Length: 346
Image 1 (cartoon, rainbow, N blue to C red):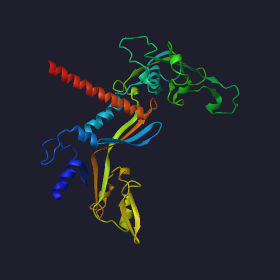
Image 2: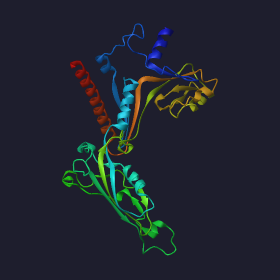
Image 3: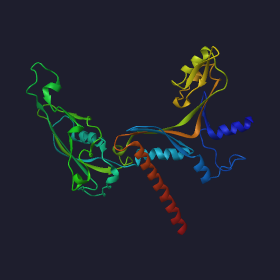
Image 4: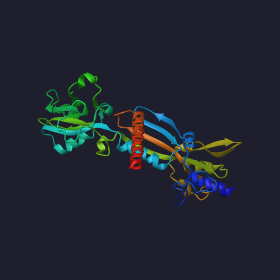
C-alpha cells in the first residue's frame, strides 16, 4: 500500500522538501509505470480537462487550468506574452522638440504607451511600406507648448502655479483619423489606455510637436506590443498535516504560512490547527526552520493543476486576450498538422 501511494505521489505531486524539490519532471508517459495505461486518450483528456474562472475584473483574470502538462501551460503563457498582437507607436515624426528629453528617448517612451484600439480590426503593415493606410495605421498628434502663468502669485515657487502645460501627459495626444477611420470608430474609442501617463516636463519656451504612427505587431518583435503586464502560472499548493498540531504549536504553525492557509480552531477547549485554504500559500518553506514542526507537515503541489494570473495592459479585456491566445495556439497546431500531411504526401 505504501509503495502504491509513493507511485501516485511521484506521478501526481511535486514534493517540496527541506533541502530540495522532488518529482519535478513529468513521468506518466506510456510504459514507465507497470499497471498504468498512460497512452494518450482523447476521451480521457476531455473528461479530466477543465478551466475554472476564479476571479475576473476589467484588467485582471485568475483561472485554473486542470489536466494539462507543463509544456502546454508554458506555451500558453508565452503566447500571451509574445504572440497576441496589439497596436503601438512604431514611427515618430519629430517636427520640434526643445525639451530636455532627447528625440530617441522621447520616441522610446511614446512606444511604450498602451493604445486603446482593437488590433483585430487592423491588418499588419506590409514590410517596406513607408506610408500607412486606414487599415493598418493609427495616427496621433502631440503638440504642447509651455508658457508662464500670468496670474501666478509673485512669491510662488510651485511649478503647477507658475507654468501652463509644463507637464506633458498622454491626454495631450490627439487622434488624427486616416481615410474613413472617423466613420468606422466612434469618437473616444481610439486613445491611450491611460490619460495620466507623464511623457515629459517642460519650461517656458520649450515645446514638443510631433506625429506618431501606430501599427499592429507582436511582443516577439518588441516588448511594446505585448498585451499583458503580467502573465504567469503556478501549481496548486497541497498541504497535508501528518499529525495533530495542538496548543501553542498550532499558533506557531499558522505563522509559518501565508495568512488564511492554516486556521486555528477551538475544539473541546484546545487550540487545533487545520488546513483552511492551501491555495493562498506561496510556499516559503518557513516550516522547515522549526524542528518540532517540519515533520508534522507535507508540502506538495498538484502536478496538472495550474493557476494562471493574467493582467492586461488595458488594450483588450483579459478574457479576450485568453481567447485570442487559444486561437493562436490552435493555429500553430493546425500548421503542424498541415506540415505532417505535406511530408506524408511527399
